[in-house]
Image (spheres, rainbow, N blue to C red):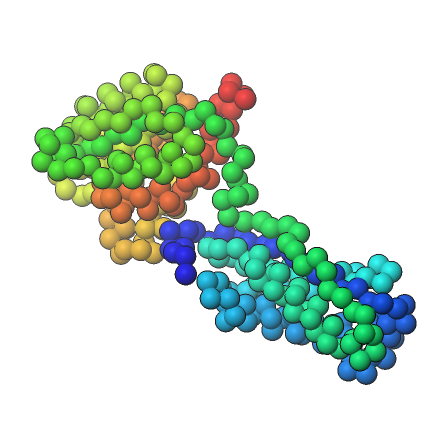
Length: 303
């Protein structure tokens, strides 16, 4: 199955339909009056649909098992057609479109099975997804496309050429995937004055995102938070909490990181861990939703 461990839980909703078409008005009347020999068509088909939704990952090999927190089955009669609507809700890492379509399909198949003794012309049409909510696709068009970022790697060893930078490159890869332009990428030693100078420089240049990686641990040379916090106009604790919560689900050492997020004028300062996994996971935790704040910062000036 596709790896979804990097994703975060969000509310996922999907509604799918199936159309069951009968060949005679008498069939519709039998359904409404409860005189179909095999029983209550709507009630039994709904039960079948509920089972179908639960069994979806058992039948489709690449479908992730997930907690189904709501299933709704509805019927709408229009002449000789019955529209089956199946709505699924969950809070999870992946969507429920397939579950909704499978549920609608099973409802329609059960209706066909129950109706075929009295109507040889029953047909199933238009099994399709009607709408979905949740995940990145909900936010893809909500962010500005002119956001710029500077990535600063804080490391004595990397700046001395003794080690290759991977964390900064992982950050840039995520930024580019989110349509954020890289204004600059530099490597500096763990020096408080240099860290502050770079933040001020990029802020004055109008760079939107100023992202530091490294120096957020607890060694004597880890001074990135101490350098940046005096510059911050307003901390944004929700970003910091989201980063640590996401990381804690993946390593118990995440609680030892001192990631920082805050507004510095119209720029956002971020201080992320220096490890490659720590930097990558921090970016996965808050991007792209974090980009929404730039509409708040100075959206009127750019839109």
